[in-house]
Image (cartoon, rainbow, N blue to C red; front, side, top):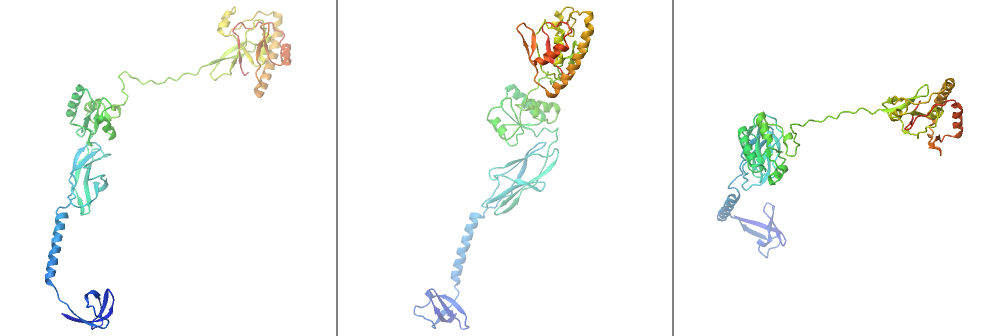
Length: 423
């Protein structure tokens, strides 16, 4: 077909041609004659080249065949899932290596009872997985979903029921270091209960039985958190006819002997302390108390001191007590509560009684003042003659000597002591 076109504008790369109906056509300048200019009229003959079309179509189809033979000869395959082992609370699933052909992997997910349980890590190298924390004697349904760049593929559904507590067939045992006789007995017990004994620590190993915590298999069992128990656990399961807990049969658990009895601590009774309480006659008596007593302050024995000195000491906040050993040494002593004294004249009894009553009143007043102000307790010193003397002010001692100067009683013997007692 011959077409006449008018040259409108000529550029180095593109020339604008005008059709008879005033349409613009951009035409490569290199295909026009070199001497044309604006306003020139060119004739263009247009025809279809069917031979070239057939050659191009043949070349395109050949390229498509090469691509298909290289990348489309095989398609990804759906994974094949099966149950490897089941226990009371766990299930081990396995599948064949996945076939991706020329497609790329996106993900491999595990579904439990129609809900996604999670993605399988490293699906190109891992072909097993373990699901724990299941209910006892319960049926579950599992399947895999493979997603690739060539599409999504789903495996068949596998129904698995967990075992009852009395079903020991799911126990899979790997042995460690055992004596020969123990290993033979263990193999026989495993066969009797219907369990399995496998070589090497695997993903379906439920228990690792050994008597020594060493070796490569023992380290791998600890790495995979597999319970490491003693052979007694298998015997206990056989005797009980059901699976038992492993807490008491861990390799590092303390073994309890047949004669062991738990020792219950016996509560001890509080110790009693003796405190001297003066009597109305001025003779101290020993009393027992549950509560702690103030610290004791001992005075050296003074055989030459009379009963008036003892009354003065009682007025200053002290009490005289004769220990049992000292009391037994006294003539006529009958025990810890006995106090030795010389016989006084009958005419001095009434005067001594009045003086003791006055000393008691004075001692009560003085103790009340001491409890309120809590002054420093006086210290007792020995003079050159061996007599005990108090570091109280001289005026107080004179007052006590004046108030208690009518008695001629003898002081306690050797070993006498004094205690602070609140009257």
